[in-house]
Length: 389
Image (cartoon, rainbow, N blue to C red; front, side):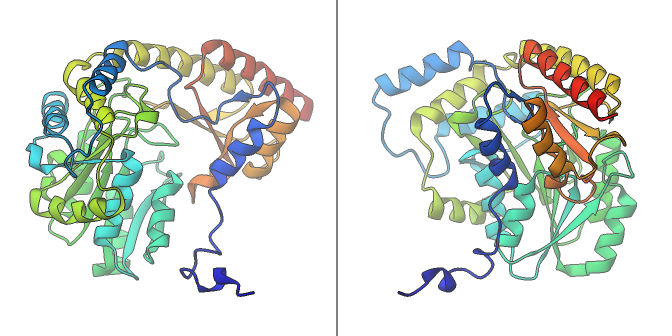
């Protein structure tokens, strides 16, 4: 018998399955476990959006939508970006994708050639590194644990000096998964100055833009429009992860090329889901406010409880994650500790090393679960820590 796996894409067989998903599957088998590892809102999708979805289905909008997205959704998305963030794109500069997950893959596939360099400030969500490596690019992780988990112009310039014209994509995700940090406009402007005029695409993943707790959401797009590929969507702000609608915004000439990848791998997105996203962008501008207030309460409770248990934590200013440094009294291998907490304490967290350099020795906890679950989980964590002292 021929072993066909030997004739598949080089590197694919050797690439490990996603560790975050593997741990999640493991934790799900443990009865009554408290899940701090879940990265999606636990709220219901707003009623008016669900009703829009039903109306779309009842109207038999069950056929192919235009490949780049329905005109109504693209216009609603463009209007939303302009009204909320002063980001100006025409409807023809919007591409509707299968979540930001597809947006990331579309851009990287459209841009990267083998040997190109992708700069990723870490800790960062593993998808960026995985996609780039899968496409034959060289992933360069820029550790930020010594600069408050933010990329600095000096660090960025050093990597550009090292790799020169091989650098093709700079990844920026803010508010950040896994750290919850946000950038000020001045900080993003300083990064823009480093890459301006160079053949570098800036992947600006702003999916958590509606979940900024203090001040206004800032964006590198403001000062680097022509080089930024902006990504956003409805998953986090409207609790619509299962609807799978993301948006990618870019100058028209660039978007036309990226859309070719989308057409090849997805053709289009489901029409009723696009109609639902249109309703969110058009008539749901304030839907996130009660969710954001609740997230802030949860953040504060979890942050205080973790500090009582001797975890060092930076104050997250966005998204719904806390990145906590493991106390010296506990197992310092973060992956081993995550499995220990699951097995011995009935608490699921995510190992910090799963997010790249600078994540070692940390764990990520999501507060996208109820306050009662957070308190229950904290009691288990505190008991676990006390037993190890």
